[in-house]
Each structure stands twice: as structure tokens, then as C-alpha cells.
Image (cartoon, rainbow over all chains, first blue to last red; front, side):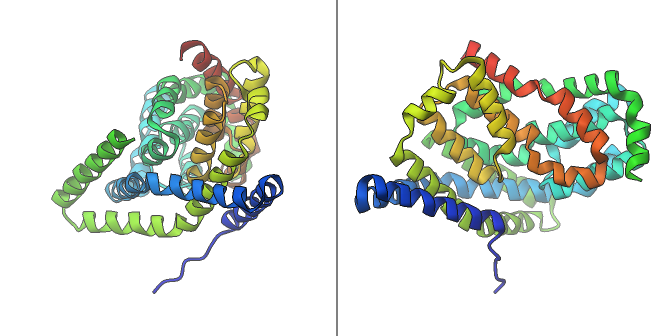
Length: 178
Length: 160
């Protein structure tokens, strides 16, 4: 059996939860303190079936698209066309900041422009396919659909703007990190 | 909710079959990776939902409405954006929390500003960004990105 370490964020949030339980207790006694726990548990149970499916979808996406493939595919991209390709790469790439930032760093050193890098990161932030299952499950379909509709144009737009206004700074950016 | 659950299960099933057809045990790897993530995030999810439960019970509706309610205007959009930048943690805690704030009376504009800002401007991510891309890049990214969340919130308030 592998042991799962509980990370710092979880501990921090556990302290927040205990603090809130204390506030509820002070407000309405033990009844209110238990009520919060009950409601939280009920909410969690309600989303559990969808949550299990969401984790499956995320895991399978990860098995279908590897960060290496995305990196290889993006490393040859530049210019205006590169911005669109970077958006798609950002949407597809699985994993957290500890995965996509090292890849962005590698792309920078292999010659990618500001627009390509900004599009890649913005698309990872706003188009990320691997996060969508959680967003639909935990935030709700309505808010998620509105969010997608309103932020759909942003990654390529930011890429174009970055290239237009800051395109020349790429040399300094590259030098500073090297 | 039931409809969304059915859709999610259907997507999972389609991906499962697709991964299986591709071979190389991709479907097994996918299921393993999914269950591993689930196991790892389960404590976090439980804590997150306990917090959601207490926010529900304590129901800070007056507070929520005053600061980020539907009539909070530009100030609400700015607070939503600022809160989104500062919110620590991944989707498992942030999404249920924002959903709860929305139910507690937050306006659609500030809510969307908060989601967009958390997704695209989270300051915690900068710690990962600096070593690989440097402060100049971070500055460029934040400069052109800073107006986006309030604008998205403004549009959301006007359209929905």
C-alpha cells in the first residue's frame, strides 16, 4: 500500500474549517456546528457520482495526451500561426503549474515568441480541457457555460496583443532566464 | 444535476472505449491515473465541502450581497478580481467555494470576475513562473491580463 501524504493546503484548509466550526458553535451552539458538517457532507455525497466520472475523464485525457507530445508539437511553432497552435496545446496539456511552466521555459529557450508563450499559458488557464470535468461538477453547468462563452476569445487575443506590444522584449526575457 | 451527471458518465465511457481501442493499455493507465488523483485529493475534497457546509449555515448573505452582490457595481468587479488573484488552492476547493458564494447572493458579474481572475491571474502560480520565464514575462502577462476579469464580469452582468 502506498501512503498518501496530506499536503499543506489541506492542513491549512482544515484549520479554516475548524475555525468556521468554532464560529458556528459560538453563533448557534452545537446544533449549528453539526448542521454545517451535515450540509457539507450532503453536498459532497450529491456530487460524488459525477465527481467519480469527472476524475475518470481527467485521468483518461491524461493517458491520451502526454505533455511530451504537446512540447514536441509546439517547439516548431512561431509567429501568428504559432499563437493558434499554442492555444490548442495549452488547452490539451494535462497537469498543474509544475508541468506546464517547465515546458513553457523549454519553449522559450527553443525560440518561441512572447505571443506563443502567453497564448499557451492563457489557454492552459482558460481552455484547459482536463479541468472542465471538475468545473462542470463543482461549479455547476450554468456558471461553467457562461464562463466558457465569455472567455473563449481571450487566449488568442492576449497572444496577439502580447506579440503586438511586447514582441521585441522576448530577447531580454530569454537572456534573463538563461 | 442528474442530466450533468449522465453527460459526464457518457463522456467517461466514450473516452474509455477510445483509449481501449488505441491500445497499449491506455484505458488502464487512464483509470489508474484518475483513481490516483481521486485518492490524493479526497482529504482536500472532504475539507473543502465541510467549509462549503459552514459557509452555507453561517449564510453571510448580507456580507456577500454588500460586497459582491448583483448591485455592487464596479467595486464588486474589482473585489471579485482581487479575491480571485489571492484565492489559494486548486479547482477542488475554489469551484465549490465560488459556487457557494454565488448561491449566497453574489452577482453573476463579480462571480465571473472571480473565476476568471483565479484561473488566469492567481498569484500563487507566479512562484512557478518566475524560475522558468522570469519577472519580465510575468510583468508582460499581468499587464495585458489584468483588465480581462473585470471586463468578463462586466459582460456577464450585462448579458446574463
